Image (cartoon, rainbow, N blue to C red; front, side, top):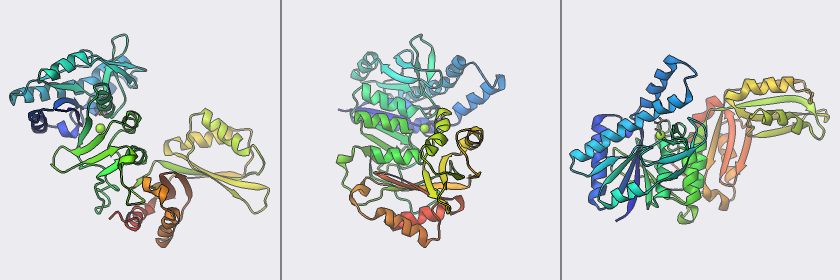
Length: 403
Ligand code: ASP
Ligand code: MG
């Protein structure tokens, strides 16, 4: 008998038929004598629909009431799922955020779970019941309903797994697991059987949107094994756990890409100490996150060109700040938003020499120009022209034996 947290995302509970199907998955787990806590999302599209309603009243709809409104989507799923289980003769009950309670701190719409009371649910599990819990929400110390950020049901599931000391946390979704690259765009993409938290974090922050990255981070911190799997097939999913449990035969585990970056070049800045600091200080004060930085010596040796990348959403803000800055002199600012970041991720990279060279050679064979580079122990990212994205991803997927 093991205690399990099963989390079902919005598409998994998107219709009544699907909720009934989920009830059958839980019934099977229950018949194998597992203690099940199911964490559920709102039915797909529901949270957006509620958000839209609030916008029709006011764009700056009252924050407290917005959380009351948005949290209701999960409440609906809880009741329907529990009802479906009861109909299958499984003892089941929904526990609302304030009934448990799930305690949070922080602002409305952006709160964090800090504690969850376990007694009621543990009693219920010990009496052979299945507990259904709403994801994405809690209450503040004043007793107000809070939500914990979009996609937050993953974080709820991981927090429940930790606080209830569950054996594992299974994330049921509409794909078979985590893939070596985007399977919608690159059909030869393969499902990854096992991946480390670190790699998963890199992949999810680089654009593979299977799981919320802050939830993966929490799982890593407390060493909670995760499994991402499909609600709709019986296939094995992807297991996510710590690196020691993985035998690396490949240097690269996955290829990710994103199109949220933009590149800025500041031409002919004076080449003397403090210039880069003067340039980036006002950006950091304005919360602009600078990712990659490259500095070239220009031909006259007195000035230099500095190129860096920021999030696309920050581009006009960045240019404005640089223009207003009195502490740097330069000739002009050029920006390019039509760029993509393509990254290879793999814990096996650490012990394989020549990965960098192989990536650069592969891109050059495809005539793709590299505009900027950044590396970490288990990741290598390049900025390239956006139009070359798929060509680059395909090539890297092939040369690193992922097809
Ligand atoms: N229903 C919430 C959202 O759409 C939370 C979740 O599904 O994880 O963001
Ligand atoms: Mg989600």
